Length: 214
Image 1 (cartoon, helix red, strand yellow):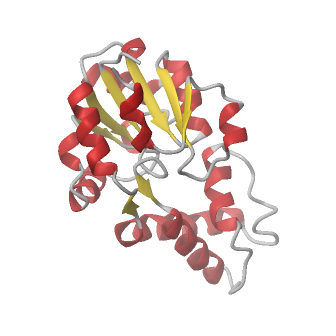
Image 2: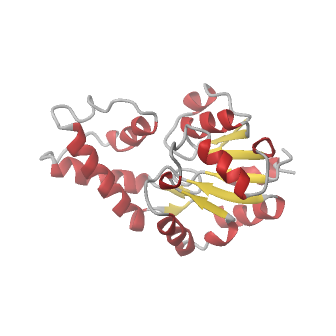
C-alpha cells in the first residue's frame, strides 16, 4: 500500500486492554450485587457496545443503565493501570512513522490529554501527529466523521490514508470515509467477523503492517 497517512485504533490494536475489560466487568457486576459472572462476558460486553448491540442477556435481571454506568466508569479507571502496549509495537510505530504520518483515533469517551498521557507512559506518543477521542467528534466510529477529520489534520486525502483497527466499527468507518482498511486480529473480534466487513488486508497484529506499506 502506498499511503500518506496511517490512522490507528488504540484498544486491541496498539495496546492490550483485555485486563481492563475484565476488571471493569468484575467491578460492575459486583456493584450490581453479583460476585460471580461468566468471564466470557468481559470481552463480549465491549464487543456488543462497540456495535450498539443489546447486552440484556449478559446481565440478566439487572438495570442496563446502572450496569453500564458502573462498567464504563470502571473501565476508564482500569485503563490507567491495566492496559499495556502490545509486544514490539514501539519498533513498529517507529518504522511506520518513517513511511507516513500517524494519527490515533479511539472510541473512548475521555479527554484527549488522558490518551496522550497513556501513550507517553508507554513511550508511544512521539509517533503520533494527531490524537482524537470520541469526545472530539459528533459521531464516533463507525461514522466516518472522525477519520475524515484525522485525514485533514494529517494534510492528506482520505483515499491516501489507511485505517488500522481490530473491530468491525474500524473497518466500517474506514470504508465509509473512503480510506484503505486493515483489520488486525489482536483484539476482541474474530477473523470471521472482520472478514465479513471485507477489509483490504487482515493481519495477525500491527507488527506485520510495515511490510505492506511502501
